[in-house]
Structure formats: C-alpha cells, structure tokens
Image (cartoon, rainbow, N blue to C red; front, side, top):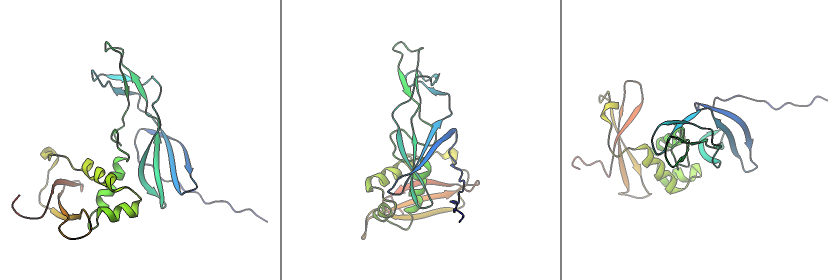
Length: 200
C-alpha cells in the first residue's frame, strides 16, 4: 500500500528585502510566516545618518497580511536594531522596513486590500468578513489617505472616480472617495469627503 504525499505549492511572498525563516499553520487556521530583514542599515532616529544594524533585534511583531488559501496570514518579524556612536548619547533605533508602518498592525499591502473591500460595502461588513476590528479598519483607511494630495504624483485627471463608503449601516452615513487613474494604472486617492455634494 502506497502512502499519499501532500501536494505542495510555492507562492511568492512579494515583500522585498526579507528572507523567509519558517512557516507555521496554527490549529485555529492562522498562517504565520516568520521573516528576517536583509537590510543592513537604518537611519538614526536622532541625527538621521545611516547606521549599521548590529545591536541585536527588537521584540517580534505580527503584521496582518493578505490571506493565503483562505487562511488569516501574519508576517512575523523581529526588527533589527542599531546604535549610533556619532550621537553624544549613543541612542538606539529600531529598523522599520518600507512594506509596513511603525505601530501599524498590518502590512501596507493588507491596508490597500481593506480599502478596496470598502468599496460598495460598509466598515462593519468588512470587519466581519475579515475578522478585523472596526477601529483597525478605520486606522487602515486613515493610513491610506493622506491629509493633503501630493500633486507631483498625479499625472492624469482624465478618469476620475467617485465611490461611496458606508461608515455604518443605515442612511446618511457615507463618505465619498475621489480617485484618479494614473498612466501606470495605479489608482490615486485624491480626497475623502463627507458626502457627494458639489459645494464643500
């Protein structure tokens, strides 16, 4: 009698400058992907000079990422630390990589995904379907929308979209998202307005 082998696939992580150390599927259906930074330096938090990260690692952080095969997926990383010997007090700085923001519970890719899920849906609905708290989704929305538009990044206003996001179930709880599709295909958020009225 032959034993059956488990079919295996490989999926690109699509996160730059990291090495995958291990993967683990927990009993509750949560996928943990442990990674290590391959970036050797980080700017000093005081003087801004690039300093080599040779001062160990910080505590492990878990960042919610895009789901893999229906599993809640988290990227786990112990950020590298550095000590700046050029500064008088020799401060230490914890490295932050470009694919997440400091003190954010999500990767930037997952924040973008949540923003797309909000189109034609409500924050409460997305909260239930993604098993994410209401405030966490509001935080993702705030991180994705800048306080002011960087017009240097806008190269095309020929295609402008207006989408409504329901903040809560019921009437009169909408925000209008104004976007423009750029030459490279990227959708640029221009504004978040309290309604679709012409005068603001």
